[in-house]
Length: 240
Image 1 (cartoon, rainbow, N blue to C red):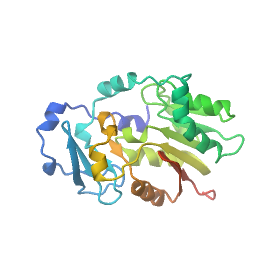
Image 2: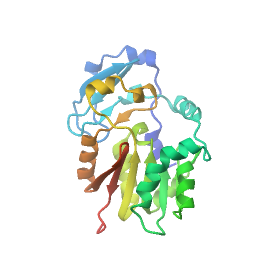
Image 3: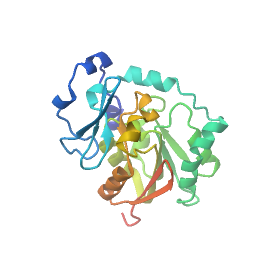
């Protein structure tokens, strides 16, 4: 099913097993920049949260991720219907970020679209043909081999076990001048992180701050824009 499937299906474990492991004894590598020796930031309900000293990504170690079946069970509980007005309002910022940056016949990919691809419907209605990919609900890996003017990740990037692999593959699928639009809540500081409702979702395993996106933009040689509170847009050089 393609390289992304291998990395998007996390290793199975139980929270009871996790509680027995001491965080100081867990040598690991940042899944975004591959830097070693992150700092331990927080622990909640048997999960440890580590912060990379280089790119500032906060992440849950791989052995504490849910298994594929448990992960999908959480996703199945999401009520994201294509015709839900509230859900469409939630996605409007990402739709507008695309529409304001691409040409009239731009073609895109909604990566991690889920069972109710409302954003793709919105973009199609605005004249932007949009392919779908989701490792559980639209697992057609053929769409990952094509090139696009825009790629969207709405509430997806925080679920990625291997963000470096995924983001580099998506970036290579963007045409010169293309845009990668990411919608996710951002880390502010350590105190706010400890109280953050975003941690309540057991499928959230990677957390990004503005510093993380700054690092990512430099790594990809991209132009970075913040059109909204929870939006980050990476623009690919038009000469590449």
